[in-house]
Image (cartoon, rainbow, N blue to C red; front, side, top):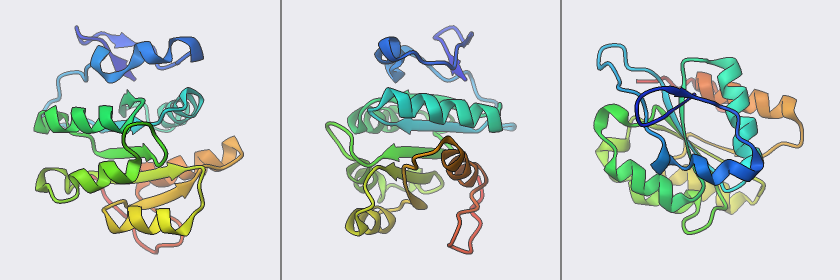
Length: 176
């Protein structure tokens, strides 16, 4: 769900030709009640179709998640640095290969800041290169996913992100 500057609900659907209108600097999160803090997710990916699919699946699985979209690593990092504590995301989904800063570079920039320690950080990429996965996991990513070829498999990945129950790790992550 997106929110305009007046707090009014905006449309979740993104059409390819108007994707860049929906950059984060045009949209703001609604005011957050500190007692009943809602889940906020930041998604950074330079592919509008990937953003649209992630958005659609997340909203289908959990209508309470408020989404903020970014098309570059630099945009999401700039927003994280400027964000008020109550507006920080519960989880961050980063594409590995983005312009300006990669997902791994974003993780490197925020890893030593206690302010971002409670954010679940996920990296999703078309690359299955082991070195990329190891870099991301060693700099704070909770999981590294290779973008699947099917919508069904992407749904499974998103379900893992939303629940924090990552396949193959034997661990369950929790929202704070």
